[in-house]
Each structure stands twice: as C-alpha cells, then as structure tokens.
Length: 264
Image 1 (cartoon, rainbow, N blue to C red):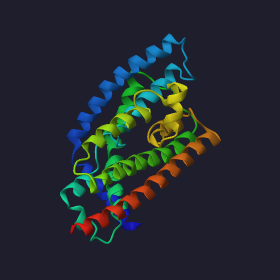
Image 2 (cartoon, rainbow, N blue to C red):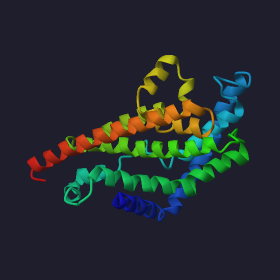
Image 3 (cartoon, rainbow, N blue to C red):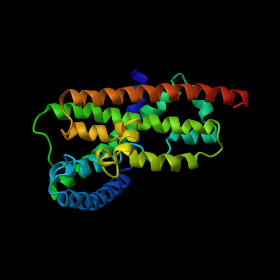
Image 4 (tube, rainbow, N blue to C red):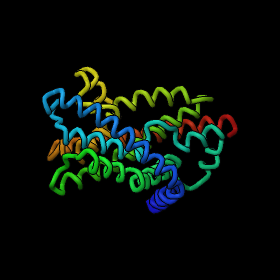
C-alpha cells in the first residue's frame, strides 16, 4: 500500500504545478454556478419555496457542492492510462512491480484531491458568500461526507480507467468517451438533482454507479441524507467501487494478454 500512497502523493504534487489552470477552472465553476443557481432557485421559488424537499438553502448547497466537485471527479476526460494504451507505453507499465490499475487510479485520485484546494473549496466559498447555503450544524454529516466524497472521487477515476481499457481493443475510443460524457453528466446529478428526475429516469440512474460519484456525496455532506440512510449510500458507493475495480482488473488482464499476442 505504501507504493500506491506515494503514487497518490506524486499525483497531488504534479497537479499543484498547474495553478493557473486551477484558477481558470475556479472562474468557470463560479460563473456556471451562478447561472445554475439562478435557474434552480427560480424553480424552487416557482414551486412555492420547496420542491421535492429542496428549499432555497438546500438547493443552493446542492449547486455549489456539485460545482466544487467538478475539478476532482472525472466525468468528461479519458485518464492518462488511456493515452498510454493508445501509444503503447502501457507495455512498459506492465513491466513495473505495481498493479497497473491501482497505480493509474492512485495518480488520478491524487490529482483530484489537490483540485479541492484551489478550485473545490473556493467554489463552495463563492456560493456561501454570494448565494448562501443551508448546511448541517453537526459534525457527523461532515465526517460521513468526507468518506463519501473520497469514495465518489475514487469511483469516478475507477470508472474512467475502465472506460479507457476499451483502447486495448479499439483503435479510437473518443466515440465511447463522448457517449460516457453525456450519460455520466446526466446521471451523476451534475445538471439537476437525480431526485428531481421523472420516476422512470430516477430508477435508471440509481441502477447505475453514476449517482454514487456526485449525488450521494452531496446528499451526505449537505445533511440531506443522514443516519442509517447516509451509511446506506456510503455502502452503495463502496459496492460500486469494488465492482468497478474488479471489472477494471479483469479488463486489464485481458488487455495485457492481447498486447502479448500482438507482440506489444
């Protein structure tokens, strides 16, 4: 485990070299956060001050926590491991005395955790100062929310790693990436809370791992879901993460066999 902790720390330090990009991301987060707040708070106001349990304060918490997560979870881009598969450099990675999947995810999670500092937390601060947010007064939601947040970030990178392994069999995976962006962007709850979906679409969403990436951490951290219900969400996140890692490990082994057959 020590080597993966070091890889995670290396990813954290690597991302710290891109502060201008992080500040640009913060500006984008704040801009779109204000637009999103305007739309969703108008929706709450039109519903008489509450819609499906969301008040103005809790909806604002959803908006700004989701904006704060944008730099840490991966919904839109392929991981660096996908580029190494495409270039063939992954063959070198297989010669190293580490698990290729765990090393790649640890590096990406390290980068995602650093993004919380210059981009995530300030985004939430902008929401607190300009819009106001209803957040829990107890410590427990923040403790459980931290666990849920870490699981969500790790799950997002485990899923994109799995997506990238398609490169072992496909020459070009950008088509899959675009499809993933559309599906994940909707079902994670990035655009609007999953709980505001029509019943049929909500059922589809909760049958996938995507709400566990963003919606569940927001619900736990904001105190919308508490007690045993919060623990159930965290348990669901852990289950989806285990499945994603098992699938990623299997795809990696099959992909390695394909490389060896082709002389890679």
